[in-house]
Image (tube, rainbow, N blue to C red; front, side, top):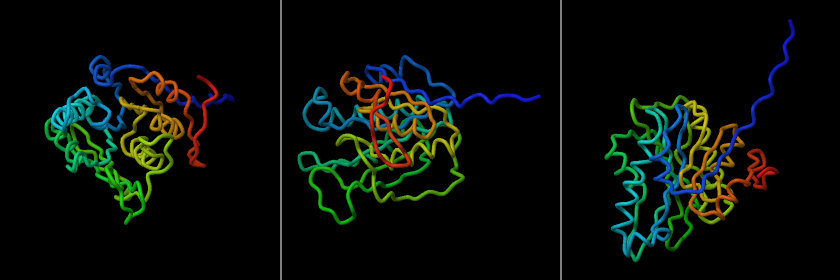
Length: 235
C-alpha cells in the first residue's frame, strides 16, 4: 500500500510584548524548551538607580530565574559582553556564574566569541563576548566537540544583537546535544536568536517589552546558507 508523506512542518515563531521575568513566572516551560538570551546592560535599565549595585543584583537574580525555567537537563545559554562603567570593568560571565551557583546549575560550556579581530583596541565594551551554557539536574555531556573560541560573532541586524555565528553555535548545540524543539529568548530584542533558530528548523518564542522591537522580531528572517537577513513574508 502506497502512502503519501506528510509535508514537513514549518518552524513556528511567536513574539510576545511583555516583561520577561513576569512572563517566565506565569508560563511553565514545555519539556523540550531551551533558552538562548542576552540580559540587558546597565545602560538599558536606568530605573535600577545610578551606579552598578542595583543592576548587578537584578542581573544575578534575572539570570538565576532564567536558569530555573527550563525542565531539568534542558540548557539555558547566555551571550554577554563585558563593559567598562565609570572606569570599572564589569565581567558579565562572572555574574552569570554567580547566578548558577545560587541555583545549583552546572556549566556545560564557556566559549569566547570575538566581536572584533584579536588585537583590536576598543573603548567601553570588550572586543569579545561570553557564550555560556548551563543546565539544572544531571550534567549534560556534549557528544560532538566544538571550538572554544569563535573567531567572529557574525552578522548583526542591530548593535546589541547576538550575532549570527554565535546564535548558530548555540542553536546547533541545542539541536545536536539537548534535543530541543523550541528556543525561547525572554529578552529577544529585534529577534536575531528567533530568526536563526527558525532557519535551523527550531520553533522560537521571544518576549520583548518594546512594541517596535516586537514588530521587527516578528518579521526578521535569516538565511543560514548565505548569512544574510531579510523580512518575513508573513506578519
